[in-house]
Image 1 (cartoon, rainbow, N blue to C red):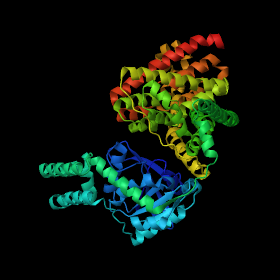
Image 2: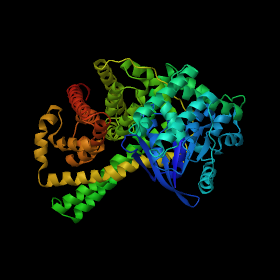
Image 3: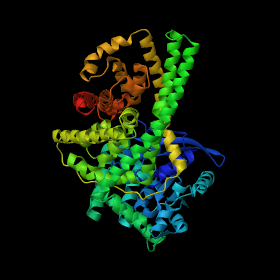
Image 4: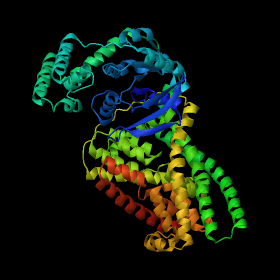
Length: 640
């Protein structure tokens, strides 16, 4: 049985998904697209379901790629049921999507999520009356507290087993007659060509949706085009507005009518949230608090990571000493086993101590609702760079991983903005780069030096964005951003989300790290690493780095954290400060922070934009990294 979770952004849809799916999730692309959805096979109430969490969408119209692909997949993948997740405090704004879903003729359950937030705002919803009007089952939930989730899926089982016929909410009579005429035409001329609900297709054709027109245009296309044009003209004459606006306004009017019948407004309770927003989004104080929050975040990650790293590295050093007492040092077997041990220790003792607290902190900031407020604060900066304010969203995502950050640029309104935002997103220090920054600079030079690298990165990203904006001039519109309410994060959901992101490292990166460690060990044993280091010596020499670090730069292209782990192996010690100077540590980290994006980021840049832009990003980032690292190396004598 296949169930779809559909809802507008910030409706709590993914929180419901995470509460039942957890770490057993996989992320895929909708067929033939770069639009992500998350899927999990879960056992609920004794039955197994395929649960699909779609990206947040405001409608099923082709206003952007994500919304268009959601409607296509819903109609082609044969779903047994749709759970329409609604922010109960925004019922009127959410119902237009519900009305579209009902037209798909797929059973729908309405999850009135964030019921506690609606109560706080003085909003009282009559779920029984709402259920009668729409002909659907309705369940109130508070997903962040795991309230009502079990009851929701009991309803799911009941509806799938027994069926439940929803109602079609009709438009006003004049518009309804046009829809029925279009629907009748489709049934008469194209009944064998489509398997989708004829009413839904009729409305989409009247809205001038290119995808649904393409389904039929190859059969008697002239007659279809003439009929669509005739009825669209009729809609315009009836209402004096463009045909797509007519359909939108009809849905909105129906939604507000339902809202007025089912909602009673009381007196909202003003609490600490409004006062907190006044502080966090203040035009001056908000930036001061943001800097303090980031300092606290990175200090916390560093201190936890450094404590664990020191403890674990001591343990692995003891294991290496134990290995040398049983196997002859310098032998092939010793080199192979030592390389495997270094690969394991690199992941367990160097990467995970920083990665785990970093992701937990990032998930907490996201679930609390602070990251959206950061986007609001940074909107003005984005416009000074010359970008749409929404471009801050991919940039913020980049601190977790550059790959989804680049993919998130599809929400931007123009290709020019997408290109600039993708370049910026690929330059943001992801969690892998953060591991290098924290594991090297923070650990050996101090947390303030690490924070300075992040500030330098913000400056460089801003300047780069401004330069690109000047090279690609275009007027950028303002930003409309939905600020979600503050929520107390559910620790279970935080744990699941953190594991979901760590799993990529454990399953994908760690095996590559161990394999890379073995490869580097073999290169060292057969003395082939000297050839690579010699070939890269002009670069390492320019940066004032030892020639032996050349191989680590190659591994860093696969995964940035590999550069740090391979560095300890190439130098032959985890006590890096005994081999490299503070100046060299800073130079190496600056280079790794800004140079070529990882392989996965390069692939998604090529797919989202094109190969030429991807190659341009590689050239630009390599030139930038070399320039910055060279300057740091030259000026380092003044500081260290």
